[in-house]
Length: 265
Image (tube, rainbow, N blue to C red):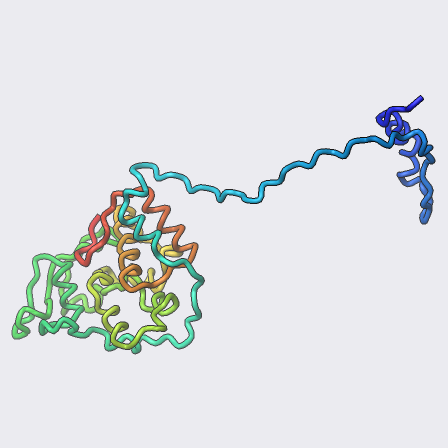
């Protein structure tokens, strides 16, 4: 009589289960004997399970409103290169030219050009040909506060921030630029915004992964401005920076692509 393989295997299990535990002396190789004649020779080989050769990458969560594919600013972000941050070795502010130049040759330096753009109710220092801003009303987009600027009294209380800091640009592509491109970058109105000294110092050379304006109303416009700058100058972003910007822009996919005007919500 031929013994079914299942019966033999079950019997083998119960007969040998104790031998497979601590009761087997160290070095013992013996196992319960099973008659070879009792095992059928015509057992079919198990059918192989097909293993997929490709695993689809997880899809990103859709934007909460609008279509990502219809969002120019998210498309602009998606076209940025993602790479690791390069070393800061060799960075020097002087590599970007003098602090404020007259790159557009309008007879007025870049700082005063931005003050004229971002302040209201402006008065000029006499004898400067409507160039040097003496006073004006100032809205700080980073803090959502209003200030009255008087140059002789407030000194440097208003500072001009590089939306993408010079140091950040150095670590993400600007090391390869010539001096002229770095000078243009440092004086580009697209990359400049008037803000309070405290906000500018808090931001320092951070990217969007480590600093965002306290004023949440401005965050969409702020990161959109960073994306536009990095796109224009072919700077890359780190993965954490990309993720931080994307999280914000997915809440406002209709945010327009940034221009060089005043930073407004």
